[in-house]
Image (tube, rainbow, N blue to C red; front, side, top):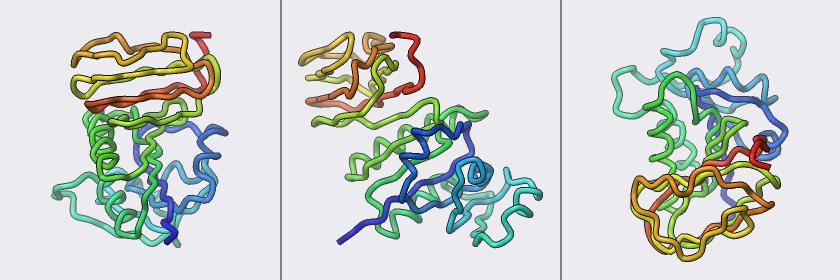
Length: 216
């Protein structure tokens, strides 16, 4: 069975980079409230537009009169982004790209997106969060490879204590490392090309800056 890949347009900061456009290729699109403002710069047309529309100005609605809008009351238990993610999962999504999920005016929303992504990953969903300039990937027990440009910066943010952390093909490799919760040891590493991450226990977020070569 083929599962559709979905991108959710969220309200945070977003720069339409070539790398982001490549990630979006072939994905179905859902806009969450004010995240619709990113559709034009990305060259995409969402199939659904969901949320309470409290951060959507009238002129944005006027620009997209033919997109199906699905309004929700402002007094709700979920963010607009989580509502849109749930809609994608109901349609069978196993891979999600959350565009505009990092940065922006609401730090609480950005942090919640990171935590939500970690939970989705525990449920077997492949999740990437991006602002175009930054990318975030959940890291759970096991191994994963991330294709990063040589010289780009990345950090690992532990959501709890990490054991058996291994990083290969980086300037500062680690092998079977124990990272206490709250440690800054894994901040500001530099990719030597695609990087492999392995973990025995714990949960973390890999935060990468593929266009930031200041560490080269």
